Length: 436
Image (cartoon, rainbow, N blue to C red; front, side, top):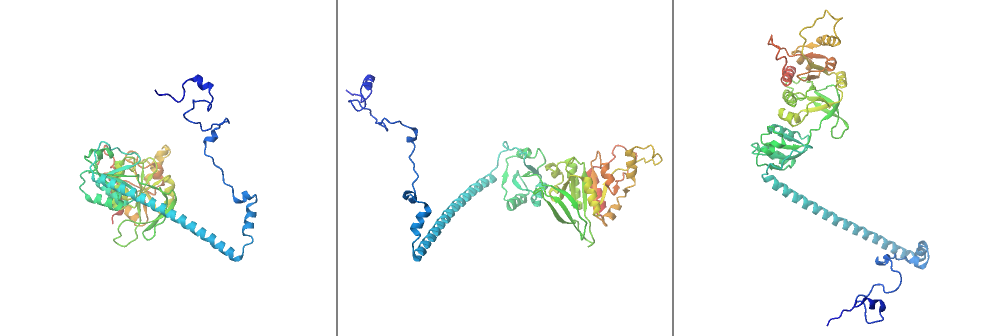
């Protein structure tokens, strides 16, 4: 028969004190005394060891004076050598431990980079499906063969990814890998690229990048020896800097060349913006200036329409176009705006005409012929001002202009087609400026 060692009867436990009878507990309590048990006793006991001078009941200075105050010069020299040796060994140990930590950190970095590269290489050679592709609003997706090539060649913005589908031009992939180390991501079908470029005509290639940084123009200097300076507020550092520029047109006759620039007033259509940029780059315009508001977004759509000229030509923004015109005119630049001539100009009713009519009458005296543009450009730098097809150049900029120009219309008795597309008009005006 098996007996239990404890808890036979509650009554016996009350009557029998511990240690006085046969009934004993299986576990002996840690504290068997009758003193008060506190929580602190469960914590590990820690006592700060006393210093030797504290044990002796003297100060630290007194202790070391007694110990080293009466030593000889030879013993003191040995002591100094010992201390110096200890310091040297301590520094060696610190340097050794530091080198070990740095080596371990470097090995971890190399391992991480190797794993990441293997992962990227694997992704780069693998065709991916399209259902997971979405355009990130924080980035831009440049599409089209020429647009992607121009972004890669211009090197004005970082390159993140290159997405391809049956891309025929292998030079794009090779240049992206060699110059930027970017991974090439092949997709199974072109629908993934359609999603990234919002159904634009991508020609099987889409480049993931960031928005083109555009600096603010502050001043333009005079032109000397085919060179001029542009003072800008950098879009990256937000600091003002002066950049020396050279006229981009070919100087076949070894004569003095002057730059030609374009200011776009209220051009809000990205297709028109791209067309203007394309014509400007083709004819050798040095740079473009746009207002910081009421202007088309210089994004992928404009880039596609410009056939890549967006990244290749210099583009600046301005806060105050009127102030900019005053500044450049003081340095010898001529401002010439495109405008339409009034068909009826009655000069006999000056007293009854409105303010806008008086302004129009004043502006009529500024018109010059297209053939005069090349004469002006041979003598001074020129900034052309072009407006939108609907509103044209604003009156405030026309008043600030030195001259006005208009493209003549040769079809008579027609009121339907009263103007040209601004991209076409830009090409005609620039060609009249730069022709020899």
